[in-house]
Amino acid sequence: MSTIRDGTTRHVFTAFGGARCEVIVCAADDSAVSAVVADTYAFERRLTRFDARSELSGFNATSGARVAVSALLGELLRVCLDAYAMSEGMVNAACLPALIDAGYDRSIREVRRRPALPSRGSPSDAVPPLPNVLEVGEGWARLATGCAIDLGGVGKGWLADRLAERFENAVVNLGGDLRAQGHGPDAAGWVVSLCDGRLVTIRNAGVATSGTSGRRWPGGHHLIDTRTAAPADSDIQAVSVVAESALRAEILAKAACVTGSAAADAWLRARGSMCHAMQPASGARAA
Amino acid sequence: MTLSTRALKAFSAVGAVAVCSASGVLVASDPKPATAPLRPPVSGASSSASALVIPPSCGGASVATGGSMTALDPSLVPIVQQLQAAKAGERRAILGSLTPSQRLEVEAYVRGLRRTASGASGVCAGSGGTVAGGSIAPSVVEAPAPAQPLINTYVS
Image 1: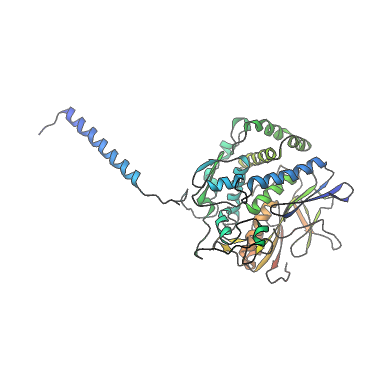
Image 2 (image 1 turned 180 degrees about the vertical axis):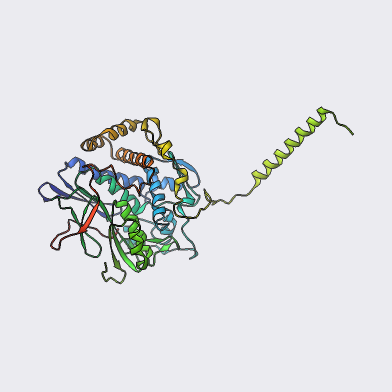
């Protein structure tokens, strides 16, 4: 824990496979911050795809059958369906088999240490539309046989929103998906830097940055183009989006990165981006 | 040739049994692809899980009536009711009495209730009504030049 200024503290921890996470709170007790960290770990433990004992892995392993799901998993599966609709299919949680085919078959640390050879099948494969392969009902869900779900950034965005909403004045940043709550430490808002270096001041808003440079390994990265079921061949290296929630920002940023620079700006404006920044794949900065 | 009423009834019954049996055999032997979609493909991106979502008129009920969209451990139902009645400052204290996993369950459940009650998707509904410190409209402005960022967003 470090003190930024009187009454404002920053707590940094790692989760989600080594991602840097932080909680910045104004005038909040330590127990509430500890709860944020503990809940983040509990969320990861229950919903990671890298542990066969997790609830998500169990759900994926029973594809084809209607199975009972917890309130948490049920809610997140619904969120995935919403994300699919909002992104017009660009954010598709059913992309897990494609991710594994691309080489992302273990935690990102292990993949970087010992990359797997991509084992893609036909290049014409596409990720199946999520609404066609996932049903969610009251206390149950069903995934079509052979399909598998990866909650990915959607889960982190959802969690950042829930955790930040517990506070009057705080920021919860879960590996690039952040949610700012309240007016900031000096009532002037929360100053956040975007992927192009620009600074913005936000209140009660979410910011997410998605791109191809973060979770990357020799021969691939984690942003799957659902139309080809392969890592996206985008002319954008990173997109930062400010939106009303971290979840919406995450969905928009990921979809825009896959969409490419020609259409991304108009696409984002039409879907609730309050502000966004892009970094071209060449490395040159552009707003 | 004339048939008695009894004979006609017997023929009818035998015929009905034969037709139903044949239909049953045909249905049972009809091959189904192993990866058939759970629902037929539909055009348009707005075709998410709406077919499965209980409409607000049915699902907007309170926890006690079980009108939510997701099952919850019954032992947590009183907590949900407390949270729904709590003021902003009280919510953290209520959540603090739970384990991390229980907190996640309760918050997911409450989120589902809000979604059902509003009739909107969780993504589109934003966080309206959940702000601990009262309602502040989301806003963003360019920061002044000398500002130092408190938070750096980075590629996830």
